[in-house]
Figure 1 (tube, one colour):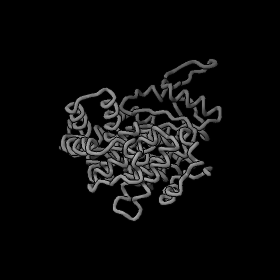
Figure 2 (figure 1 turned 90 degrees about the vertical axis):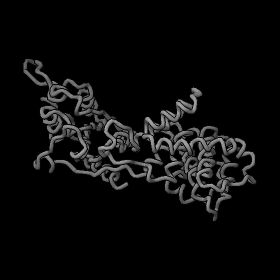
Figure 3 (figure 1 turned 30 degrees about the vertical axis):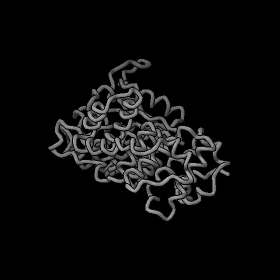
Figure 4 (figure 1 turned 90 degrees about the horizontal axis):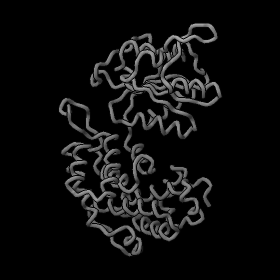
Length: 362
């Protein structure tokens, strides 16, 4: 994703940037993931929820001198950590919908590193803003030309493959349902997002964020034994009636395929469903099952299963399962599997290299 790579360069160079994109495109998730990957701290401030004193400060007497001290705990903590030599990302969301007085304090913080009269570390504090395009933002104001030149502007639209990788990592949503949602969208890319047009006023719609939310809701529904009508209502209330109903048709097909442990017990002989959507479901369920039950036996049988799809029409469906399993090698729960990489996994060698999953494996 070019936008993500651009963001990383801005953080490396410590040049403020602003992410322009509609809601639900994973801006917050991306910042959190990047901060975690770097081992940096990350604090969020929502422009529409701020008071001017949160960043601009209130008068206080320090050593006999009157000084303006910021109210927001995030700013004070960022100051403390930066002075200790620890990197901090301050993420200012909804930057163009803040009240004018708040926006002025935000821009002073981003441009000068000043919160009231407090100077934050210029070396260790990094700033990222985010804003919805003016045509869809509520009560948005424009940034004036002199302000615009102080930031790198990045058009942000979450790439499907980046979103899918996040889902299959198991960090964004419970893997069993995350892989099912990813499998549905892998074959139905047009359902990934709907633009925020007027027809969706007061209505849910499909976005990367709402699909992620749906996976979390499905996991809770399954664990609580919620009836079908409740699950259907959850789907439609999260991604909209049309998309929700279409997804439910896919989700309910799970009953048409054997349980993952049964599939693995016949890994060398079981037939693959002719229907592509059922094949997606079969492999996504196996991938999630092995990830949650990473025994050597399950691991080897699953690789034997997916390797059987080489040079067949089912190969792309099996790749989803292979991707989930490949990630195990870089996780604590799967480190013991590095010594048991079967020859069948070589069919997906390029995927391993792309994920960097073979580093340190034997």
